Length: 384
Ligand SMILES: NC(=O)c1ccc[n+]([C@@H]2O[C@H](COP(=O)([O-])OP(=O)(O)OC[C@H]3O[C@@H](n4cnc5c(N)ncnc54)[C@H](OP(=O)(O)O)[C@@H]3O)[C@@H](O)[C@H]2O)c1
Image (tube, rainbow, N blue to C red; front, side, top):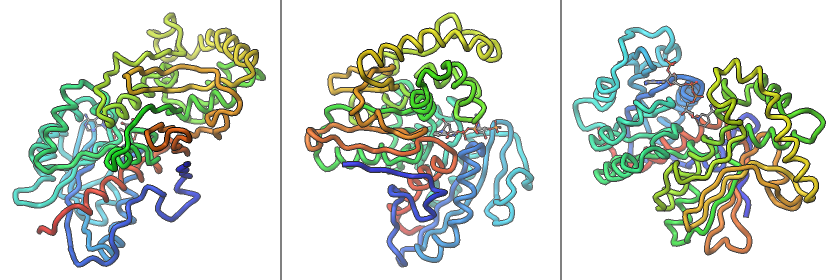
């Protein structure tokens, strides 16, 4: 079975994972929302919220009230105003950032439903989740650091949710693709996960697709960098660490207590280049060419293709590395920056379940975050 997703831009209708709220419900609900991190994803989310607010209020009796935005240095509050929402960069009262004061403001003094969206990549912010959840604030995030960070904190987050607050993080794995929810649905309906494999990095998928020996690998990395496909420092992609984080998140979703240290990660960055300043690394990028050319030659000699694959099985074996796959393998024929996740379960054993599509980009990531927010909103009982 395949679940495919395409960019929102090509499909103005909700993406396949978007949660359909019951139409014209009489259960009017209000949800106070605070956004942490108005960057690329957070900015796209603000746009999507602004566009959807009137429709959600009219057709679904859901009032989303944006109550604040906080960035690294400063925050603004009391901004539940259509005009101010539209120009957060020039907003009314800027104050120095204070995450606790921000959360308290969004929570409010009474009994209202409140939700924080963390669109940062900040460890400091992730460290606040257990307290926020324990206080009854829902949390939604594309930030991978809580899901893949210390196991103790992960457990504290889960137990903080027993009070009723919800924590959702679909967009941490392959952006807007329905990966975490698909796994959750399989498990909740009694299926058993046997293994997960996938290509979880759009950047590495693109590099592998294009690496055909016509150009040195370093030229492709430079091209991907210029196109904005890589992080500003491409080593963040090439090291495989971001992919390992996604594998850890999926393992924990399945109830397997995996940590980053247990993932065997094969970095594409030679040790000699790992600690250089970013500029110096870019200047010595051609040192990647010989090892990658050798890997390509090996793949060809074996009649296969090179792909960057993350794998996990129920014995807890987890790896992230370049692999030679046969040409008939489903991962051999992905397009551009496609991510693909293959779940092998008791039910999907002989013919695994595949989720495939673009796995990065602010708009699709923000849509994944928004869908999580709507799932939480749907579960709320009416309150003032
Ligand atoms: N971009 C994608 O395609 C994609 C895909 C999947 C997942 N994600 C994840 O989504 C998250 C956001 O990515 P992005 O591309 O939007 O990043 P970004 O453009 O760098 O934005 C990050 C935002 O977080 C804010 N921030 C950082 N530390 C903070 C702190 N301690 N307190 C409050 N705000 C803080 C930054 O504030 P300043 O502006 O003041 O620095 C900035 O507004 C990351 O966790 C990323 O891994 C991104």
